[in-house]
Image (cartoon, rainbow, N blue to C red; front, top):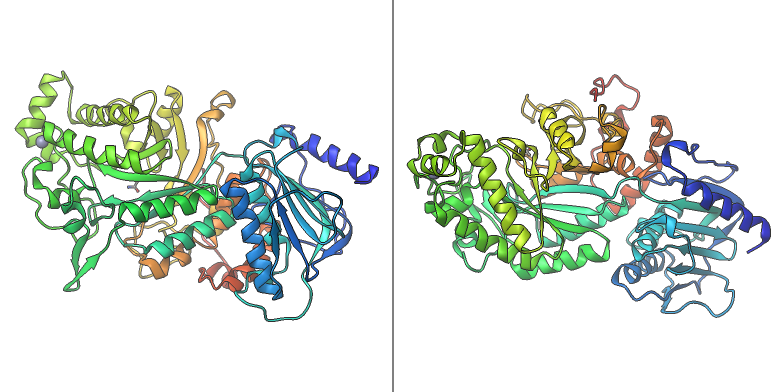
Length: 552
Ligand code: ACM
Ligand code: ZN
């Protein structure tokens, strides 16, 4: 590395470790070539020349971790398919300076880049990516994919022009550590191969949490060996006179977890309770107060029948289910739902009322709090931390619970005041089941959520004090699927995920939506090359009147 380059890289590194609020906008000193990366990297500086891939390109990766290996494989697969020349992976570092190589190095770089940061240097000799941790190499690889022309994403070679990238240096690291997408696989079952594809999309935009909504009223989707009826019966419903459903065996779940791990994605299972539990209750009616639900519902909405909080047998069931879930999912976090639990039955149930009395609780809200806190202890026994939707605030919030804010501003603010950690998913910015533009097929109560509104979101919501900011882990975009069977999921997810990923990854500070749109245009070409059926409305209606963005 020449001295001028070294000085430049060192100064860029120094800038990367100053606080995001102090950082200037990314500098683009030469505009003859330009690249478009989403989410926007922290710093990007063009240098002289370009790197042109030659047929004997090699990738060097010494780090043996699954994530580093996956990063190398990803680049090898893409470049091999596009150029028609197999790109060899060497599991070592080159002994001397090499030409025509991509080097993925986990050593000798700045620890300030953290667990997920990286640098990429492109010169006429090749590409060198450095990261303190393997996850950074994966994100370097995802960025490198976007530095190449969109043809890289075609499944096979179509042109003869060589692949090239302008010379540049990138320094990058995420703003938030929790960058998630939730997929509801209960309302509509998603095939395992589709989940892999979904995870590929998440990783492409540097998302690192797959919140897997596995149970709800309309279907239980995870094999639990102690309770076989959950999937023999609870995974199926009648739809238009036909049996509809499906489930994941524990082996399927292990495959999903392993696939996600290589992409630096944690898998957070959601097992809903005490509400949204009709599929479980239909399988084992004793779980409810009055044993009155015998069929898995096929209509949407909030079911009135929920788990009984008075019967010990319900807690025994949850303990056994969570023991299997905790053994299966290696991540530290388990989501227990906790939302939309109507208390009508609890008011009338002698056992629930007896529990209120014996525990000295004030009302049914406190009974819900009792239920959730007891479940949190069960999870803690397995070394797991509990996440719940924001209603777990009702009746008293445990100080260690993680609250997923979706709908109740007062619960979000209360949780932050209490010192609880929070994941932000407010409906008006993050609900990807909502339509992007007025859609007569969607229910009227659904708010319109255009890309511009998603882009305007900041998880550090107004009113969060500087000393509370560390409590905001990041955000998640929930994708409920009542109206999104598998073929519709890409349409709901994209292009809004491009904006959401930038909200969670890119630097804090004034945003330039027009610059984002320019990069989005380039991104559409990549999505086209991948064959992804994104929603074309933004592209086709750019500049036309759009609904006013929601206020935070
Ligand atoms: C929710 O949308 N019911 C969390
Ligand atoms: Zn009851």
